[in-house]
Length: 106
Image (cartoon, rainbow, N blue to C red; front, top):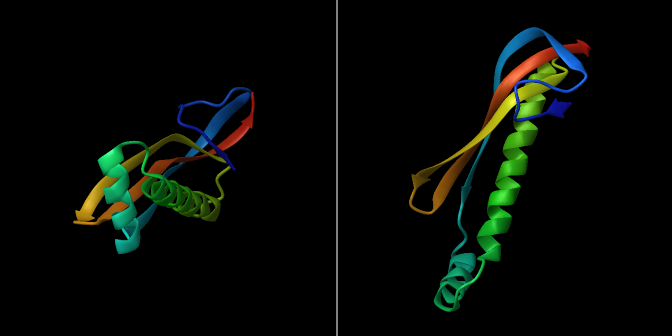
């Protein structure tokens, strides 16, 4: 499955638009990681625990979006975007969405 943030794919032509596809993941912080993050916040630097949490969430949302596109028989997803929103204090949703399409060689 080709997944791009652009509206076209080099060497390919969109022959059919199948519709919007999406995948999401909702994750909550872990109290142990919050303690480590608080210490790191005092001294500065990247908070690796949260970086890893968000990376895992992005991958899960992307995988779910691709699964939905495959279910429609898509060859690719164009105009892929990510959105993050806070659900409650300590929990966030990461949403991946795009347009599922059928392709042929240009």
